[in-house]
Image 1 (cartoon, rainbow, N blue to C red):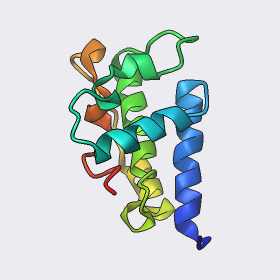
Image 2: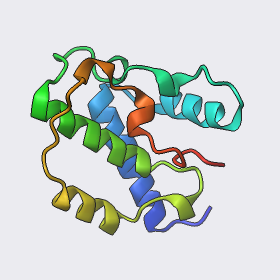
Image 3: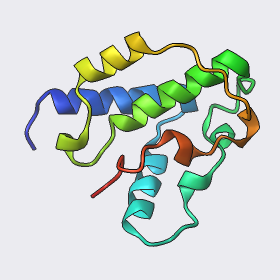
Image 4: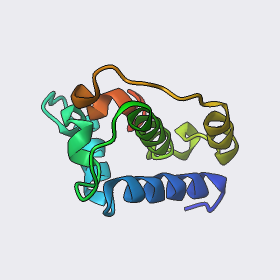
Length: 123
């Protein structure tokens, strides 16, 4: 394994998900990786985002939910198994800096697949 900036961005993604989920995201990441390599359409990516977030705090609404969805999407963009598909930390930083608030109209219906990019766990 080569240690470089792509390792740092992966760690950032894991740490960010750990904060959002309230626990280590290892099982979720493994499930998403295995479901992306199988032809099964019934997988963790169809889970409601609400089930993935830390259950000890109230589910966010409005602008806050938009921000949580955006940060979750950024975290997953850092987790591709292939380092060449991961964003750089500079790209992550720029995306976060350029992001403007997003109000979601259907907060209860957000699915994990909506925040996890289609190529995020491409093997």
